[in-house]
Length: 213
Image (cartoon, rainbow, N blue to C red; front, top):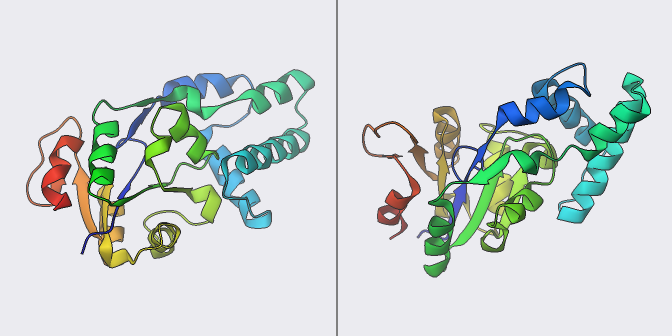
């Protein structure tokens, strides 16, 4: 029996403007978002982040402070890094809130599992007007493991207090969909901007209804 619906964030619930984020960091860091994410994951392995929004911001502030010192950034660069907020590059898809509302109307738990490695995933969902409809949100940096590792899917199922077999998972990357299926979740591939090829694929979140029961 279906008890929960789990969404990826970027490409599923929200559009993340990579060019805008790169522009914001380009004058501050000597490397890009991928390397920043790698360093943040390593930091999270050493200093376990709290799973609440305000705690995440404090954790990210500590990370950026240590990173600035390690790189020898001047005061202006450190301020720019500390002020960087990935939420500014996010915007919700038009079908996102309706999909969450319909899942909640069916008394299903709702979760978000993201490989996005910059913290404050719950805060980002609140900033784009979706946070009130999400019961649990976990990022790779928060849990120290990323999709398609089975531990990532099990972590969000545990956060929702449901068994993986009772979850429906939606992502826009085939390897992440396959990872969810391997732990027993029912999984859908979202193909925004292209025609869905068949069963187990949807073109937008309005098609989710037929899988909710």
